[in-house]
Length: 450
Image (cartoon, rainbow, N blue to C red):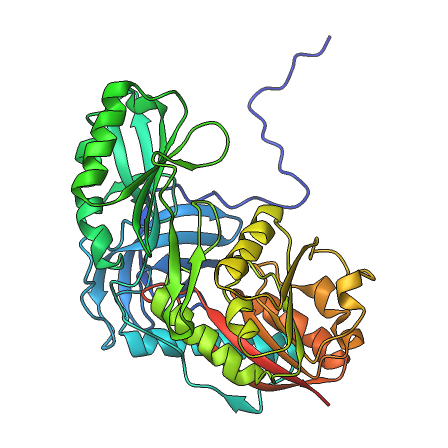
């Protein structure tokens, strides 16, 4: 029997594989340009680096967050040569917290970045440019966020409770004592929240905390085990001090400790009050939300004798203001509880020309009874996946005008291809700065039938 040959290395037929770059490695880089998400792009030894916190033209030291194939994700650790555009980050947690990735960029440059992202997607994917660009719809740069989810995790090894926001590029939690983008009523709650939670007897059973400021202030605690009477007393005292409602989320749906308490938000220009429960979708930026609704109504130009369709209606954020202007609004939503909530909101605001329906809007529109009479105009506000199956049938509904509110320019551009194929023209488009200090882009587009 032949002796086995040891020590030989066999190379796969595809050639040698480049060694992967380890997480935590530091690398000096020259940033060539900005990506659409606001990260700096650098090229080194055949790899493309995406660097959080870097600007075009800068020389930086970057720490690797992760690598796959020839793509490396990193964050800026030091800036050796700064761009003229760079400004000091207002938040003490910048660079570690994953929330506000472009606060080192002046706000007008943030808006320009978002505008370029929208224009590039429409041009590259759909091959179109709007006949008119609308100016950016924006509000305050800070103090705008009325809702926040705070991460809570028990570190068994260190025997301590971590409270804060997720770190950039990882599941680590960055301890936060203040957050400049939160609305002012939530600031003192945020600063005192960690100390209060650490007093509870079963920190390992705590989930996340959600903060909300609307017609009332609310604190919701997710917990995986029953709370003791002493813990409940601590939570109630904390909320009483901050004049906030206490909501608990154990098994089942979130519930207020005081069942008589209501939570919601106002659409002041239309004298509307919309009820809300933790877990429902609600726009976090109240000022830009109101401006967005007003602009949507202006662009859609609804007439008193018209029947209008509102797709992905949620709580009725657009449907209720529309109902004040038209003969009838038909509003459709995929989540049954939201449909019920929207119908209740319409009734509580004395709007009786609205009808709400549940339908799976990720599927093609069927011959639903509510669609048979047709519509003069359509408004849709889909999730990030867009509304491809829905837009394929919009022309058959007879709508001459369509306002599309998007939280993802890529799917807006994809759906624009289909709308143009059906004979719609892109009349107007513009960005909605719903999340200042981030690279997240929301947009609005007006289409008209040719």
